[in-house]
Amino acid sequence: MKLLIIEDDPHLSDTIKETTQDMFHTQQAFDGEEGLFLAEQNIFDCIILDIMLPYLNGYEVLKKLRSQNITTPVIMLTAKDGIGDKIQGFKAGADDYLAKPFHREELLLRLEAIVRRSGGELKQNTLSFKELKLNIKNKTAQLGEETVKLNGKQFDLLEYLVNNKNIILTKEQIFDRIWGFESDTSTTVVEVYASNLRKTLKKFNYDQYIKTFRGLGYMLSDAGEQDE
Image (tube, rainbow, N blue to C red; front, side, top):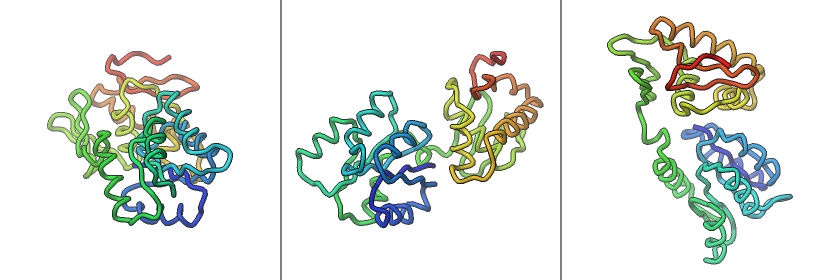
C-alpha cells in the first residue's frame, strides 16, 4: 500500500515514514502545492495531511482534492486540537484527525482503522475477476484449478488492474504505483510488463480483458473490448 505524508517538518515527516514503513510505501511532500500535485495522481491508499503548510494549507489541499472527486482517506495532522478546527477539517472532507504530539501506536491504529473502513488491502486477502482469483498475501493467481505463473511485478500490475477494473489507469499512475517515484527506469517498462502479462493471460483467453488506450494507459474491462 502507498501512503502520502504532507508535512512541512522534515523531522516529523521522517518519523512518520519510519513508523509506518512496515505497512506502507511512503512518499513525502513538504508544502501544500507539492502535496496537492502528488495527491492528484490518485494512487495512494491514505494521506496524512498537516494543516499548517507553506503555499496551500491543509484545508485548501483537502477541499481541492474532494472537489475533484478524489476520495483517498485523509488523516489531518496538526498542533491545533480545538473542536472548531476539527469541525473545519471534517467539513473539508477529512476522515480522521490526530493532534500533535501523538503516540506512534495511536497513529498506526488510526491508519489500520481508516484503511479497513475504506476496504483497503488490510481487509482483503483475496481479489477476483470473473474466474480469476488473486491471493494478495501469497502473491499467487489461480484460474479454476490452474495456477497462473506471474513474476512479482506482473502480479502487482494485475492486482492494480483488478482493484481498479473498468477504470482507465495511465502509464504514469501504474508506474508510480508499482515501480515507485524514485525508480531509475521509465514508464516504458509499463508497456513491457503489460505486454508480458497479456501473453501470460492469453493462454487462458483472459488477455481480451486488458484494454489498451494508446498513448494513455490500460484498463481491465468486464466487456473484453478491443484496444483503442
